[in-house]
Image (cartoon, rainbow, N blue to C red; front, side, top):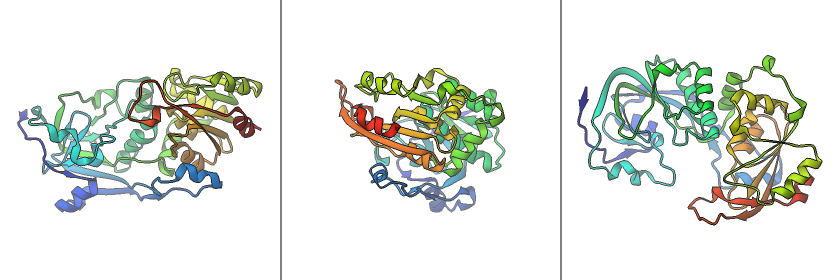
Length: 350
């Protein structure tokens, strides 16, 4: 059954904004409070956390009676307003969201079911999937709301299918949205957006996927270097690899491996060297005390893996290298390559 509905003209910034402004507080369930970001363990770590939020956001779940989903980037409240927290378009403020440029919407498909929305704007990225999309699954499960089906914008990537199976979401109950997707559920269950790794999300992923009794540690992977083949590369990598070879490091390409293989490698690791990148989400599987040396370009320094390291009691170090932009300029400095001082690396390995 379908019906025509006009595009929204206004927005709520967050789920609580919707609940508080419409008198629907009874539809809002608090699962975890906001958590303070840990203190630095070394003075130089202020370079990583400077200007960042001091708290991870609350873990919430809401039930939107008659809530709607448009494509994979818009959630619309029962009173026909965009809920921006669940509809984030990075680098775009709420009032400039693409939905406000539409004159009409595709016909809406109606459902009499309770449907959980688990979309994520970067679902195809290993880090964002493991520590944010999967964390939202945990929130939904903690709410104990009975779910009939799930809307998830996955692309059938191996790590997505492997983890969905692990958390007990059957493939035949998943709805994958498309460009003209416009769906209205009797009850739309929406977990809040996760902005940073935190104690409960790291614990959930580790406990869900790591079976200590089934792990066979391999001394071949005690010292690993994660090589990047596309963006955020180390330009002087030949020089850096010579140093790492002298210290007995093995090069790995996590994107070619199953999740379980990555877990085994990170469980085996005693020292990990890597440019900032999604594969470092696997730090949640490391043993306490594992040394991590993260490499940054000076133009792009993020705190996600420092934060995981602090939460998992790892020995975190970092090196800020010289920025090297690609020939084709982009709006985002996060794609910049880097040149790393080999002596700075040697100092962190000794």
